[in-house]
Length: 317
Image (tube, rainbow, N blue to C red; front, side):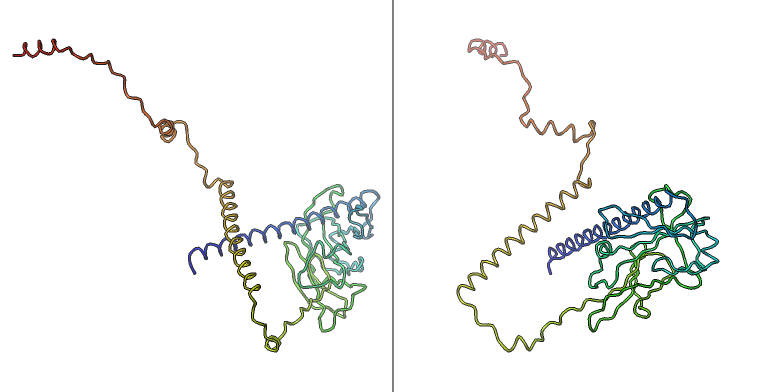
């Protein structure tokens, strides 16, 4: 392969990396924005009334997120570590849970993304059998705070249990799996217990999925049964036209990519040449513009008359 081929391969590889990183960052931003928005609405429900610890409060979401349900539960650090709370929606909260960093009170925000599950948590190659359920912990010091960072919670003894009330039947031959969406776009799969139970020791979003089976490709023998007929003259002309169009498209694509790279490089400032007023290039540039340099003006010489020339020669002799 020529060096030009390697160059194009590297260019396409870099473009794929840039597109993938932008897609990943955009997905992460959408998820964090949703969590932040739901946290604000859950805290608003707690701030409107005299909140009691250990009592869940269902909150409302904006109309553009209809279908999502949220709830807030305030607990003390002591009760979360030494007492079994029990059921909080589909989650069973055991004892022995610690948080980081240290807080006196915290709020557990429950999320049920319902029909928004695959939108905010796309999982190529899998189909959802249950909605995505989430549980996130926040500091309860200021119930009017916005954009709070999540606390890290860890179940030291028994795990947190998620019992899904309804699981769609999986296609024949496929195996349901628990999927865990943790922070920082970390995805993990696990086994389903008793058909509808998943377990975790940290906070995040959870669901039950199954892998989508792809139809098998036909065997090579199927192509040998009916060989393709020889191409006609019209088909040959059509193939030649397609070949020419393909070449023209490739040349246009190469020029387009080169132009995009040049624009990006110039935009990044890699080809920018800065000159100071006292730089030598700034002095030479005006000289290069006017290439015709005027000759110095000399006094015109008066032609000598013939008699004067003879007189001068005589004097010299």
